[in-house]
Image 1: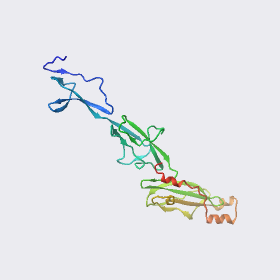
Image 2: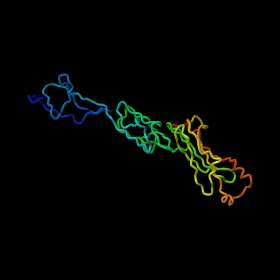
Image 3: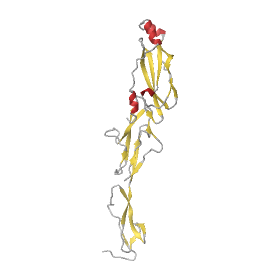
Image 4: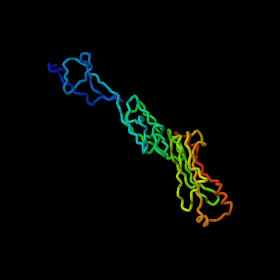
Length: 256
């Protein structure tokens, strides 16, 4: 029983505060002559029979993306989501890191379980995701960026053997030129090298640009090694490099 007075009766806010999954309590409202009005428990008082109704709002939660050196394209960042809606995380087309392949977002830094592509509408907590990267070993396409190969061959007395491989990148249509290296006891041979090439869209292994630079053994170095006669000289003039071929077909698997 409430004893009414002309000054009204103060109310105490419900404690504990009621909960509703995925929602936050905005407050308690009443009908004020047709206008929905929020009740102020500090100042308002009950002066007549009335009903207070809880008003709920959809909860919002934060999202933190640990990119580990990657760059997310403008407009593709995800910093939060709303209950009932969720969010789609940036894809491999939206995040890049030079020299690496994006392998997905994971809910923990040890990359256990399966990669996460989206936050569902029923999730109800702040989220942190970690980008997993794998260093490129073969050329792949990332947007308009094309990776290409530079191979350095040194004569070994019976032809040319692959000594070092580099991976570089450029844009479709670029003409790229490799820089010769300095190897002790060897001299770069531009006459038989392919130091430049034009990058193009890769639709098959034959489209991968591989620049090949050859290095001849200096005379003083050659004199110290075993001399195999005229055949060795012929091999150097018409190189048949021993190539350790990269796994070219990996370039199709841009989502790996």
